[in-house]
Image (cartoon, rainbow, N blue to C red):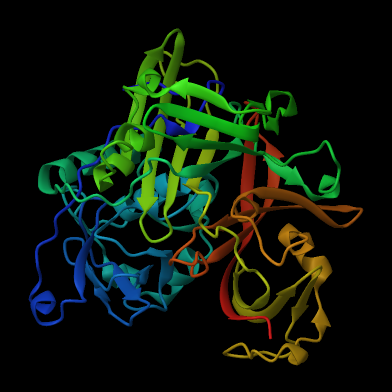
Length: 491
């Protein structure tokens, strides 16, 4: 496989081996209703996963299969209906996988660990059959909803399961790749990247020691301080790969180096990248799904720098968002240092409206240690207001939101933006914040865009405590998980 390096040119464009594009079997319902299509959730084909689409299609997956309409946003749940544990919400397409289901490298692998650990037929990993009798138990559901899949090793004691390891999950994802290559194929062009100007956003999640990379809210307006977020802008033409002026993607630990920003166009002949895959590799002919989706376990010598990590690549045709995640897998016989780096890349056309309009009414569902509660919030510029009474549904009348709770949500740092919108990177970074001088809090945000307008995803807030392990890595424990769903625009 072609190697990649954050320090060399366009780091985010060197991609894992490709997946083949699936061709779904035409269902009987498709014959009578052409707008309904058949898709597959593959982590091995999963049976018993409840799904619900934005066009009101619902049911349980059968050997991975589900129904959807073009343009649907789909949610998957562990349980008998949509009151079960929400596994993910994303744009529908013909093949969906755990690596597509989240922006977090560790969370996608841990999602596979959870599904494998719930498999009622562990002797046969060619299909995952969920134990729905267990999933329907209210006590088990309450435990599930307090589980943070971002940091499973620190939280898996909450469920009495025989947990599979990270290594087993990674190997299983590789097997899933081979399953897709064997059973699905398509030459359909889903994206044409030539002569398109792209934004490439880089988010450092952890450094090589496993220390969390957090943005300190106190320094948000300091002219020299930067969150652990980089950016590279580029265009692929018939003859050249052009990197445009940008702040760059060179990190020293968790900190972006401003000394490596790009101040003028850098033009390289396209022949230099003839062996590259992903957007560069398919720019001339157009990209199929197998060009822009994949998962691999890298374990090789990169000119004296041994690579041992997982690499996942996914493309959403609805949002036109290409997402790549890298996670170091620790030590092995070739790697003696901690090897815990986690990084995330978002790549999308510069013409895409990538700003998320945060202003408006949001419903918050908060999962605490022993309880769950819902509340209604109104987000607007420099302020977060709460509905002062309990409500099953959130009213859209802004005048009803009279309780000022801005100090409780200082981690929503995008409400301080000059524009009434949030950047995707702002909703996918860990922040350090202090509601009072004596209190230090950490929140990891996660938002996976869904739908053409990017506004149909679910915003996750993981409130956490951080302590230091003996090996120098950070121990991250989640004490509260919240889901935010946008109800309406500000009125």
